[in-house]
Amino acid sequence: MADPASRHPAQAEPGAHLTAGGDAPDGAAEAAAAEEAGRLLFARPCRFFYASQRIDQLPPAAGVEIAFAGRSNVGKSSLLNALTGHNALARASGQPGRTRQLNFFDLDGQATLVDMPGYGYAQAPKSIKADWQGLMFDYLRGRPNLRRVFLLLDARIEIKASDTAVMELLDRAAVTYQLVLTKTDGTKPAALASKLSEVRGLARRHAAAHQDVLATSSEDGAGIPALRAAIATLLAG
Image 1 (cartoon, rainbow, N blue to C red):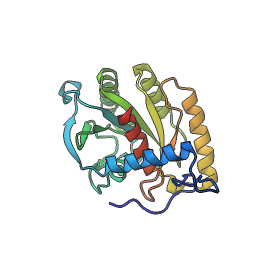
Image 2: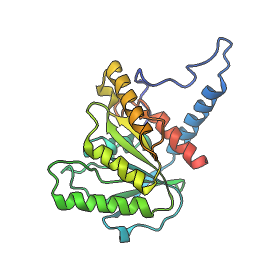
Image 3: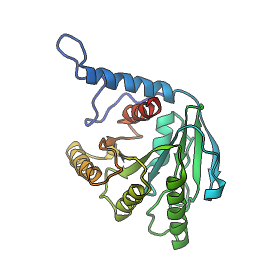
Image 4: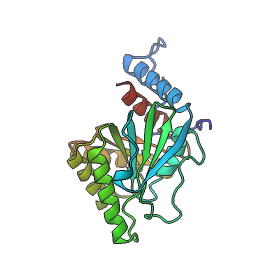
């Protein structure tokens, strides 16, 4: 699936900071190289290979794992599909808040992408909420090959108490995580700039949070190259 050509106003194009002489500064050149590495990484085949509903059912820890977490309906499945160029690699549950399993995807032996169950669905039974928190914390605390969690936040709505609770859980588990705004195509530029400022401030208040906040849209492709680049950089490090 080709990347959409359009870009959100908040996203800089690779090479947009060229000097008058046509030479890119080192930072712009590095960003362009990282985006190319990300493009090549996610041009590789990606396939679902395992699902686990209990901590004792996890596949053996091998290679680098990158996990994706977020509230129900935050657009996690759509983002994973956009990242990998598949229309239906990850599927959203027909009943929000009821998916309790960790889904594992093999990115051509380069990394494992882990789709964590959505949290914060108000109508989910208490037993499911408890199961989710227990499974998530056990996974985060006990997975030595987990390199980073990308925590998704909907750019169109306010930060929820469940979001900050998950950030605190990640802090306690000492797992590095990075905040990613989703659905930015539904946000006007001024509102998006304000949301980015708010979320960057939130990241600064949490010890395990990465300071770089990404803004993405699975609809128009905004921020997808930057997210791919971030993952490629993690694997290269």
